[in-house]
Length: 443
Image 1 (cartoon, rainbow, N blue to C red):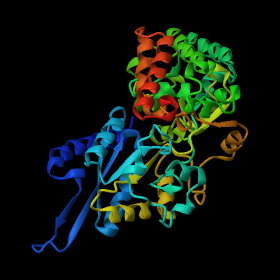
Image 2 (image 1 turned 60 degrees about the horizontal axis):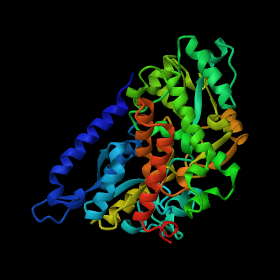
Image 3 (image 1 turned 120 degrees about the vertical axis):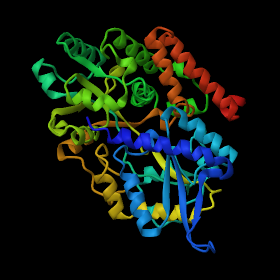
């Protein structure tokens, strides 16, 4: 198994530790080195803060940064933090005035519960590249029609990827209901293969079934997202949510996630699928390309099919228009240089390099760049019913994502019941809304 992605993360984690030692005398971590005794010529170093999943593990963004440095002399110092710590860490840094020059943060930023990048970051509305962004992606980095960030990945959609050979050998067909899904899992387990690769140690992966299935919520009531944001109803009035929490618990107890799922890391998912040790996992279609990059003999693009997650009998694919974006700290000494880096990243040739250099990515939110979807994949995507995912539409969901992951882990160990998990999610929503002085909760 190739370890390139892990190596990059390890090196960048080391970098953030080193940067932390100097942060006290250099807020934000920016630096400028003088090339001569007069100090008239400077090589600027921009700090770039991100969480692990905010940057491709292939290292393509770091490679582009090196090209930018060669062209301009401006260096980019990447400082990467664990996913579980990043949201709280960057909020503290922003509020204390010690944030990096460039910040990777989740979108959309217009939700009340988001990190308020419009408060802390430079406005970019006037940049030439802004009008080339896909409209939905642009809205994800905007507040009141003012643009504050740049983003690259196309719409995210999570499916169950499944091993066609295993399904064919066992005479299985793609499930479209939860009952069918359980039957498939049981037959795979009986054959001696782990049905599902689940990665609970990363905290985010096990949460996907709960909130990527927003189509079920909207089928109940097309206005349900707005009613939740106005606090006219609460999550215990969403039957699909409590149903899916209970179904996850049932599948875990039935052994469908395998024996070691509580210690599984997402970084090991490629090996689990390529080896045939596990038959299914939740991922984007582009994950097959990532497996191919590490295990070319497996031919994941050919051997892994996809189907909509059937939790709660769901058959609508959840769409996340833009998952994360880059922003410029408005208090940075080097806003002009950071803006120059964004312009560099937005050039068509560099957008193409990013798409080509990120195996798990199938398309960009820049319409001028042709997607990597095959004709078959595109036909499949076009055939599906689609709905915006919950976390981009309902306040105080995305902001507690990692906490929900911990709750589900507690449920799997028996420390919490499905009812406890739902109560915990609702209590955190109330706490966060009250803290934000949200009108829906403070009337």
